[in-house]
Image (tube, rainbow, N blue to C red):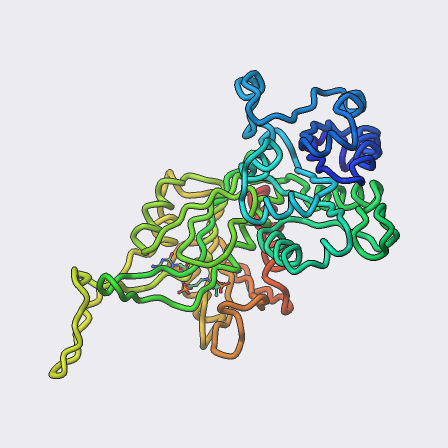
Length: 404
Ligand code: PMT
């Protein structure tokens, strides 16, 4: 019960027969000390009345996007800003489709598109709608976007058919809400965490670049873990094909020079983590036009060294973050090289990982890391990148606590 006490849930009630269960959900949330604010879609008002919802929540119920008073007083952005979690129950096929495609044509869908908070959906619909290829596609997209899903359950449906599509019971939705908010002991609330991720692209000419195999997965997982601890999380990301984790402020960059400039704008901060695979070199002068293939000679690429972002930030004196973490990506002499980099770059801890071909670290979902400090080395087992990130963030949080 204590997990939810004092939290705010923004409940979006979709238009389906299961909407009646949202009243019980509100009752259970209120019993646990949760402030519940509600948005009702127009269709949901056919199933439960705004008056019942307002009576149970003790709050005004919102339904119209263009209610000028609401827009002036709070607006759809403020709705989600004040919430710890957005819950969509029931999440109809139509609402899921709108969310998956980023449609925003009423208050519910506009709020869902404008939010940077985590969203939990409790789908409910006819079994044929649930198993339709379009819903399967939309669900996969929503999961890829980081949306949490509870249910649906199997059972007899209001329409008389049997199968998956019944909305999860309110008690199950409460368990899912608790599971999410429980994993977020906001130990980094009020702290700022800067993370770099992904590769950098260094232009050779307008159509070619130097890059590496980094997917950004390890850095994005760190950002997700930092947000879960309540940190203001700035993710400076090279070009990757990943969704931005909810709650993260992402600054897209392309080259190492741009990444350095973005990082310099964001310091000082409490913790800075350099997980990006920054290109060590760039073209001294990228060609202004596409370099033509010449049968006589190969083009000569004159490279210059890129600035070392980690080292610049770690040695930024007054602006140095309280904790500076580097990653060492090596294909040989992993620990010796990591120790040398720890010293040379002036960071507090170096996370060493072996990126040899065949290890599956670049682009994969798992990693084996070694934590290298002046005191020694600690090796962890093979874990998912998210588990690595969560454990690392716990470690960095303790380091910050010890330092302040
Ligand atoms: O993105 P994924 O596919 O999930 O893969 C994860 C990863 C292998 C990229 C990640 O775990 C990792 O090891 N990141 C660091 C990669 C790297 O460039 O390592 P390095 O040993 O070359 O550099 C050491 C440190 O200096 C790194 O923290 C790097 O971000 C930083 N650096 C390097 C060069 C430079 N010009 N500026 C830097 O800040």
